[in-house]
Length: 308
Image 1 (cartoon, rainbow, N blue to C red):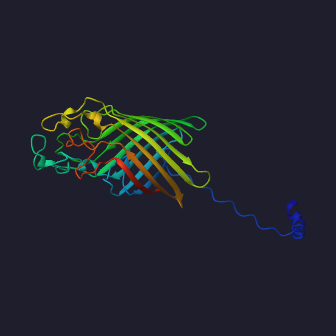
Image 2: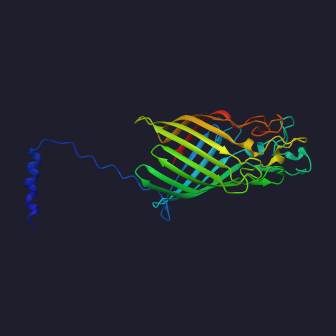
Image 3: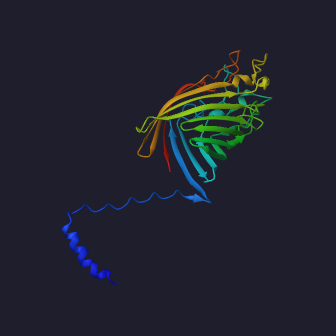
């Protein structure tokens, strides 16, 4: 037991050495995210000036509140759900441009398509999606999965429309700050459009960091394609058929900037969708709703998001 005898010598040597600042304690380790059955749990909450989806306002330009919950497994499998307010479905024009009637109260359009005293209501979008993301090379990822869009509500008077619930399969390829994704509807209908299974969406998205400034430039281009020669009855104006589902096809673009400040991500983006307002007769509506607004075209959107 020689250690106690060495202590006075160590004390003497220490006294002769120049004074030094005490070594700061190590920073506490970041706690691991909560987990469920091996899946890391995370999420986010978002406030926005409007809810935009593929260049289309889902809230007729009005504010949105959204939340998302994500479960990610180390193997690459993931499950997610998100929730948002919407108004686009019941905002649709169940009549024509010259006599607009909201699908939320279409009884005034009359028989035989619509029934008096019956209404539709859909104010919430609930999304369920999951898949597998594989990092197969440095910086490269492959993403495959299914997306289910649900709209809890009442659908008692749909007339020419269908329940908007939609299922998509998707395949994505990502490299660093670029991603390419292809989605295709595998349900019978697409967001309430009759006879529109197989509708596709292809998009290229960029999120380019500006060095270490914390700013990110966002750019995006997408193309929605509906099958042609389908659903002509929707475009019947009483005398002639003025088109088919091909009129719902459009391209959308986005350019924006994002900045994280104290844990909050602020995003300002301008978008444009070349959506048609009306069919050739200028009365049957395509993307023009009952309030007279084309839900695409040019828009400016501000969002504030907080991850947790």
